[in-house]
Image 1 (spheres, rainbow, N blue to C red):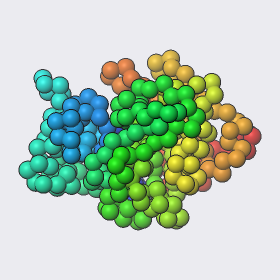
Image 2: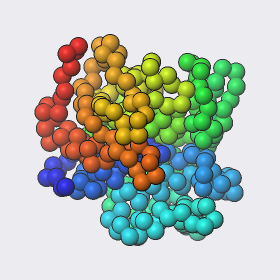
Image 3: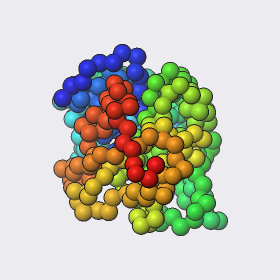
Image 4: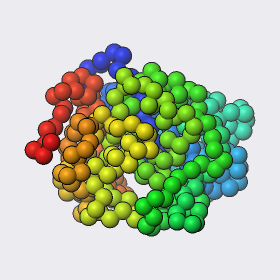
Length: 323
């Protein structure tokens, strides 16, 4: 399904993991890729193929999330599938290509540009930073090191904090893209891992704060993260935590309603939690199941809702009885 173009409505996507690529893929499938000015992607994962490559090349940025987003936005779908293929050695083909090109060309940016040209990606795919670092969570008196380890850790410290070690600066192109954006969309993902790592480089949240004309859109997670009690952690908590991390309240919150396909408990909707949130709310069923059985956001539904925000935002607002 394609949508009518609305010139000048440039979207900047921010995130990592699977969430950002699902949103990007949905926008491309809906014929809305031209609306995406840039995707700003975390580069600090240390699990799977990416983690093995970072062990082998300690100064290399994590390629996995960049690979997923490039494949999602690619117009050459056959090349994109091959780029995402898992090889017999356990590595994703695209991860190996990005690492090899970065070494050959001397720049991760140049490696991305080379692959983008081959895959037919016209959007800017930008690492959140060009400086290598490790995500660290301070949990009580202990440090949990690495995005993968943090993601699997059962967090109980309500005051746990995240940092990148060493501290890094945001990619200048990311700052410029945010400054020009009309809609800044925070993709679904873990605040403790992919989203936190994407937002931590110095200057990035300041850029979001500084573009007051851009609307900040948060796509809430489908369910609670490990360590979050699904009976107590709700959509409003997710949005509020992101707002605190960014230093700015969201203008829009998109969240799923209804049962999840795999029977998991969806992220709750607590009416009281929304009372102090000024964001406008869009609530719609937006979950689907991947071939491997994992529940993810339905990119087609997300694209439809984002198109609504661009073309007729007031028609998208869902008023709740408690507001």
